[in-house]
Image 1 (cartoon, rainbow, N blue to C red):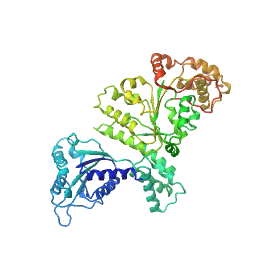
Image 2: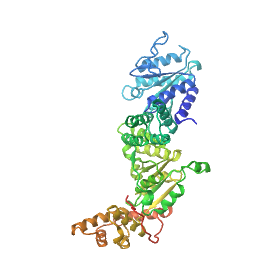
Image 3: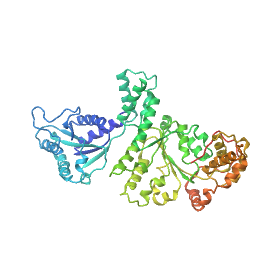
Image 4: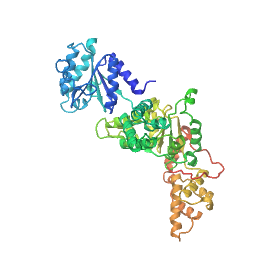
Length: 529
């Protein structure tokens, strides 16, 4: 089966055969993509040349092509000379079909004075499809930006080049293994998995660093470097999972049951059975009740990467930069294989798109791109989005909630009695205190409307009281006294919470079932947003 890059090269070859005049390829990896473009051009019967403002016209190896077999100049360092050469060949000066890959074109066709370059390019885009077949010429623009000048929109085909998939990463690894005669000790698959999600140059770099440090390719070293590379890119945040997984999350049994039934969805057997790929879930509800905690625990259970997609961090100061960063983030996610993507407080992340923010439509474009990706993607990413104010989504962006984007919507309410005992017990253990001497039921009964975060805050507050009173042991009375000083969010925002609950009755599945008989709380249970 061909890799994604090979499939895209086949697509480019078909576009050339179809006499597409200008192909606009979006990628930041010139070296990797140029090899595929040369193959695509050869398959379509074209000679492939490359231009940049530093070297002028060259072949793939960088050899200047300013004169071939005594023929006149093909193209100088200026883009004007290169356009003239393309025009000359399209008129039949030489019986040769040519593809011209332009590396540095965007700066020449944007900004003041750009018309001097844009008009000749537009003329070529109009005339090249009609040239005789034997002298057909085509232009490929190679750039990290997907911003096509409006004058060219009707003349170009935009292709977003994919990140390396698992098979392509395997090819990079195998070449290094052969070159350095390495023995991976049965860890080949782990080495591949550790690098999936990076660009081709980044894969090469992390493998090379492991070679320098360990004299081999160590999956642990590669994974560590991968986290650093993804963090440095600024488009995604790598998050460490919660040790112990969902077993260490109190309550939310409705979510846990749903997830447990679908944990096998990523297996080959599930695909063979015909099970659809999972999309994700939306956790809507009251702040401080464990919504952001769930994906960290699930990442531990599923043994897969957890990344946070922060729409605010994707915004750039230049036109088109935000959209490019979002596309890069989504392409990276698609390349990671099975992974969990956290979109925290999605209603705030997309607020600019739904409330008329004066950002030139950047937020609206981001929302559109994200919705299209959620609906059409075929990757194995499982998206967990959280929302505190679901009303802003239902009012302004209801399309986000329709089936096909998320598999299920859960409403996360304040903890039940059983959950409250678990949360307090877990927090006591996290502060190296055993809950056996504490009346957890009494505390649960006195904290009826508390959120998980408010319950967890009782323990440090009570510990300060006990320490100030002669450094004595913590008591139930200390915790109850701490609870007396808390004004619950359910009280200060009672109208908003009532509205959330009314919405959830008919529009979402309960994340927690009704109160049940309290059983012994699992060890180290946490429930903090």
